[in-house]
Picture 1 (tube, rainbow, N blue to C red):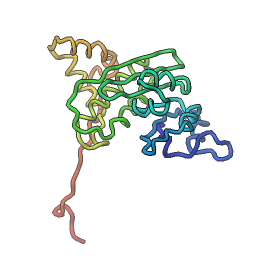
Picture 2: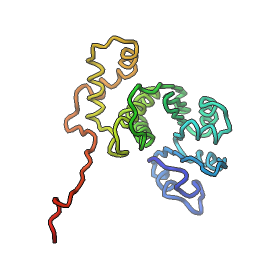
Picture 3: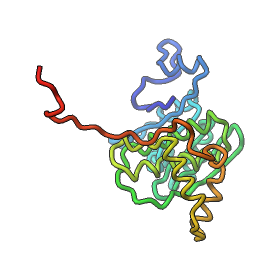
Picture 4: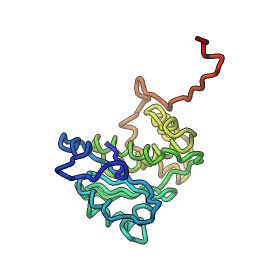
Length: 224
């Protein structure tokens, strides 16, 4: 599950367990995020809750503010001391992560895409990370997949409507894989995402693509 630490009561209180605490007792994995602190306090009590989480996915600005560090890399190392999987997203710079359970450290650059609407991109990134983690992928594959999902999302308008489905991911990979483009950037992408050939060698049967918005008009409504 993905949890916004700003939207739940304090985790780990045995006298007042939250729904997150109860889910953890049933072996649910907790992927935590946190919103921007408009007050500027950046309370360390937020980080204290990470001992009850399996992963933490702040952006670079949030990570540096909470850890009182000057760089995204330093913030990542500080967070990795507190949570098994620490991930810092850094906009156009990509994302970086450390998995204390496996000893892996990874950094993935952002894809070059025309970004139209960043709404929901962080949620899509988190969903991709959950998928890869539950599937047991290596950290660099998880990070690359999450980065791809958010890159596909920002090219469309509509927040949740822009979230890619397996059909969109397969389409993107097949176009890249079969492209005659021999530029260094394309070659780098084909190497980085070669693992997708095992996951979506063809478009999966029944694969869905992005949702389509529907707008009702007065003429579509039958008067009662």
